[in-house]
Image 1: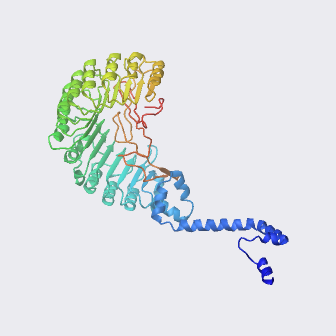
Image 2: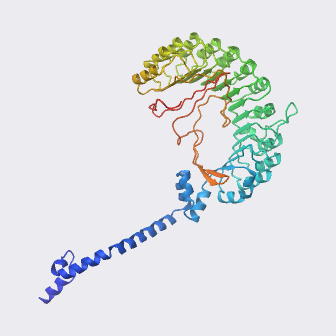
Image 3: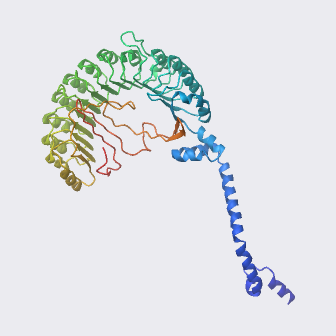
Length: 551
């Protein structure tokens, strides 16, 4: 019995002590409730401490990867959490953009102490401000010796001396771009002689190069063997880059935009030697059929942009068509001179069976040449017809009936009516987007009707906008594709304001080869000759974009 009583009052797993001693049970219950809040607080404190311990055990490399996947605002917030996060966040940045005014000079040591892993740097200064000088550029080059990309905009206080220091300290440069700077040929030659890995060079409005025949030649230098892309824009003496262009044996892309001087002779020299050029852009140049015939000797040519070159005619276009069998993209802005027409386009139709993109601005083709293109260029996916006085409903109906592979179509400033647009209700089965602008005969009713007939087709119509009579807009200032017609891959970068004159951008931006982080739309804009004819194509996600999206 004693043992039984003793056992009944002791601990028994699963036993009901409350039933055997109600007063004790009540007292025990009150004690648990009163102590619950204290236990909860202790548990939360322990959990927070455990979280902090877990985070402290994350290696810096993993923490850096986490930061790189965050938005710019979140990265800024994370850098304020603790000193360790501030250091790791700064060290994990590879891209930086600075407002390169003279006021930032005193902050440069602190900036590049925190951001000590920069490989891509942009230095920009507006016209109203005094830019950084040679000393600042020298300091930057010493702190960023692993720099692979550099962009200078409006840095007018940088001279040949600063460029020489940059070239000595940043020999791993692969991409260099400058605009509205005042250093000259010596600074450019210093860069080319020391940066043997340079692949892309873009020069715009380089005022330090002397005018006339006395300009010092630029190149070829050590970079000639690695250069793959050269872009020259708005230069008074662009021909001084001739030795560089000629000496770059692996050059694939050459873009010469709005540069003074006669370029026929240089193009002849380039074509007279073995080359691997696949892309050539010529805009507002003094170039004639002689230059086009020289270009026709580039057997690997795939992309040709000929914009506002009034001395070029059907003869030059025929030469290119007959010899450049790999041509995939052709943009012609005839500037309404009527020197390029049916003869040249028929030659393109007969010889360019791989053509996937054709842009005709200020060109007046007839139904004969359009029929030839629609019939023979079976791979044609993108077509733009802008500012043509001869394109009407019969020509558009021909395109609708013959271009089976066509995916994107832009019609602007042409004599098209509702009847022509109605042909796309059943034609072009692969068409995903059509844009019609400044065609006075096309009404909003036919656009609604077409959307109802083809739900998956994005129809963009601007029936109310009237084309200006005299508007001439030059190409964009930014980027190498300034020639008015572009399908650029979208480069996405995360930009974080560093306060004051400093902004930093993540290195997580995709390269120009993918554009995966950005929207699946890319712009395609077209400029007509003396009259602006601009339109844009944007990529559609699975072909179901909104019909009101801007092309």
